[in-house]
Length: 348
Image (tube, rainbow, N blue to C red; front, top):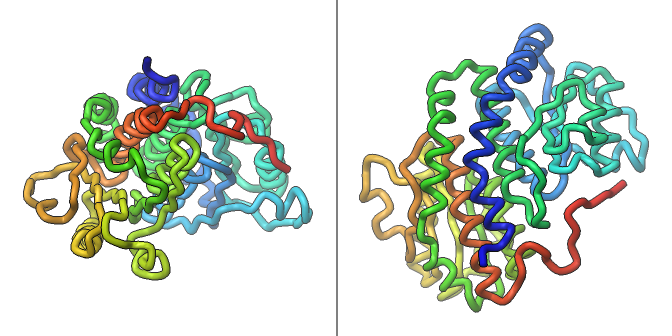
């Protein structure tokens, strides 16, 4: 029987079709506001999987808009009652439930301070949505599995859509129009070799760089919460520092790449680790040069053809979620109800 986690993950393409059509108006209004009042910098407020999406937002805002972006520590406001100078700052609150008091309070404080506040949230009647000037619904519907899948992907897609409209980027808008079909194809990709490799594993590293690093963070979390495999995410630029000491023969590594300036470094790193005897599983959407991945990894995990560097990570995490739901079951765990966890986590 298919788990709820897997069912929710594979529902994402249809969610994005609805989301892309519904959110044009709010993104257009927000774009006009940013043109009228250019923000001085940006800040994200999130926790858990949503915080991984916030890391993706940082890469997008900094590379696409040149907007320096910081990750908020909500306790600075909720516990230490700091008076932050946020006038004309673009502040994004990201959450599936929108119920965590510290995220909502931080966004409320930012709005009082004169920030341009945006809630990217699945529950548009939540405290987080009420705190924001602009509300971006995810349209993911109820998410029943504790491990977030469709809401995480819907958040990434909303962020890309926002950037595409602000920039009026025709190439990115075209890629978004093709993304739901690409995700449908990603769902069918056979990652069973990864399941076999991880069947009896206890530890792993997940590596990405640039736009791929936030999905490495998300993948590492899913290893822990659904399959009880200790996993840590690192940028490809950081692996050769301390984490490299963990690499031994047969040690499993999962590596993600997208077709941009970060790819040569990822491929070089993959080959170096493979040559040390580690089991390197590499997921990179194929492009025109079909030999580019040859001899770089122990296992090449299949993906649909590349669309755009900022869209390709969504195809990778789509295929990963299906694999992870099945891996958890193969290891004897229920991915829908991980031990010690609940769907909504309220912190202060």
